[in-house]
Image 1 (cartoon, helix red, strand yellow):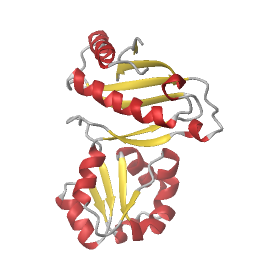
Image 2 (image 1 turned 135 degrees about the vertical axis):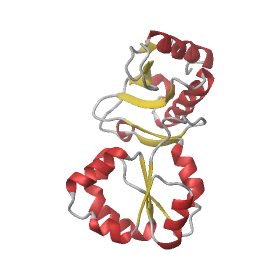
Image 3 (image 1 turned 60 degrees about the vertical axis):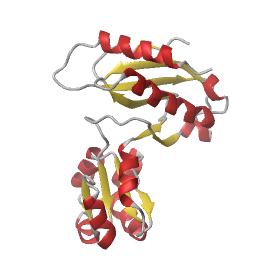
Image 4 (image 1 turned 180 degrees about the horizontal axis):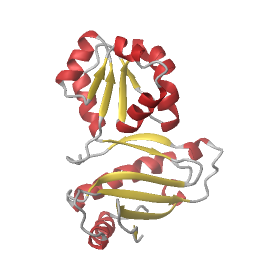
Length: 217
């Protein structure tokens, strides 16, 4: 059985209380230690985008859109954090330092499908290893809805060790909202892991700079 909402809320409150006040809004992070995982199997290479029920206003994801013509125009209207068209994309070719900076600065990338071969060639080496390859969308896509959806998305992945760590909100959010975000992640992982929730050995919650607090089961 996954931890119930009340136990998750108690751990969130404790994590907040144990954390020193900072002059910025800290993120709330979820740490899952997994067990009985074959790291060479598909479940040992979990890479999953999960849409969370609640958005953190201070730390909404930054969205980078690669598109042309009408789709680029709609993406700008929808307030994408950055929109680049084909000419601009070609201008990035070979600029490794700039591409690394873009890969680190933006959380999710959306690309017009016909541009994907070019995107793969130019941006692939920077985005691929970070698990940030763009989501391809057709030129007629409802880009405004997609941007809204990806603002609330979290990328969950396991790398080399049976540990998953991801941001689930900020300390300014209601504990109930953070708990619902955590439950959304646990539900998704339950379906991806061979033994479901039994593969989760322990669950911890912490603020960016704080001490991890264990969620009791």
